[in-house]
Image (cartoon, rainbow, N blue to C red; front, top):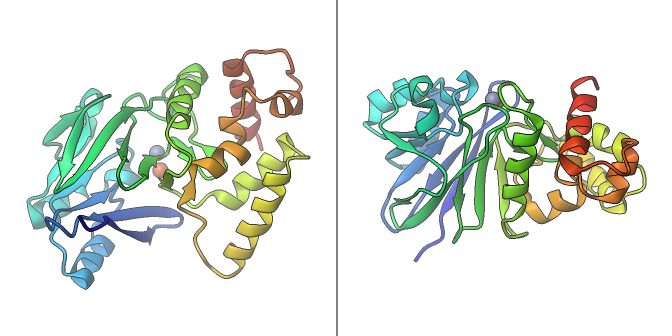
Length: 256
Ligand code: ZN
Ligand code: FE
């Protein structure tokens, strides 16, 4: 079986849209098409035919291209069952623990509420790839627009249980500003220091910092580390429970 091919398409000011292609079957998905045209250009460049539109959540910068792409290609639109009325053109409603095939590749659905109530992530275990929308970012996490801190902490903990070699395909290039914030929480984390140097160098050359790996996120992302002593101390809550520590980190980031 040929490995899955993933094409990263930067759109708008800082969004990433992804094409996911299974060479064995020809099946091709787009994840969170903010806009249609750059997706159609990339499909044409590769000679791929769109079969699936996968949405992580309802926000317009993740679904804005749904209807135009659906109309042009007849692709099915997969989205959260809980948020079906807010996903334009939805045809396949999914929820936690569901799985489906993208050609020959299995995709697993995880409910990861917090940024929105119906936020989901798509995990392709054989390909070690996670498409997590606005739940987990490189060194950051999504704002709590609809869910609670406890919900988001539970969602991030669920993601954290996946293997370290999982590539994290998040939906925005927010890494440098997230890094500046992460530094205020953990001043003496050597993995964080090394990572900041690496991403500054990449951005300096105009390169993306996404995808990252879950192993690296576990070592450097303060939002995945609300149960780590240095992070708890870093926000002045050495004896608090992780959901409360997480809430404090999120509150500080909102004001950063
Ligand atoms: Zn969003
Ligand atoms: Fe977004």
